[in-house]
Image (cartoon, rainbow, N blue to C red; front, top):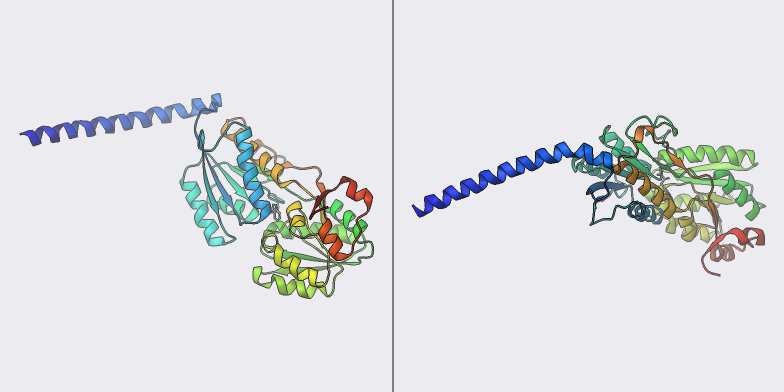
Length: 341
Ligand code: TRP
């Protein structure tokens, strides 16, 4: 008797919970559109971030994304949940992680670096995707045009100021005649930038030699070989090379071959100098674009891809000393100095 009563109340409680749950879902579903329109920041949101690989630039960009979201009113743990995945440069991991992030029903997805953005875009054609630092979203097949992306993807392009980089190289290395371009054959972002850099280097009278590595394993040997036949090494915004920058620098320093990379973090790691886009700011801008979509204030299809008009001059003094290069005062005056002094 006692038992039956107990079971009966359990059944009642169960029924009650099921009803409340159903009711709650119904209410939630009905309310979502209205809440989005009012762009209430108290609303809890979810953002899924897929980063291609770890290297100082991408790690800084990721921090920037979180800072940008915070600036726009979304704080992790308060009104924001972030699902973060790092693909470790592995295509099959990127595909699985993209699927997981899509399944998580995040409100917005963020792809940091071209291969990560491509993996996300291959997985969903409907969820909003914001590009964090994709060199050329058009040639990477991520948007129709920078002005009018047209689909579910928009974001920030970090197209490098290549001309300014070569003009700087000319001033620092006036005797150099041959430039060797070091990049990964698997990254669309690098193919695009190397094509552009080749045109500019040609115009400036350089002989261009290209060294595309199939994977990380061939980098040291390639640098050893190219150091014998080029006057300096140019590195585009290439994730594979950025990830192995320490061994590139170690190998190039053996023959005192200067490296002109494309970003401040690679100068910090032992590149000689560059004109580059500030990676933290790039991330912050990305985070702000994510927030605008979360607020319901913008849609990827009609939001132009953001591009930076110019970069900062960055010089590594320690590296200059090691290579026996004197940096002209005029450059030092406007440069951010890495490597002490
Ligand atoms: N632009 C690169 C891409 O499209 C990603 C990137 C951003 C990067 N900052 C970098 C690569 C610095 C190398 C170094 O994939």
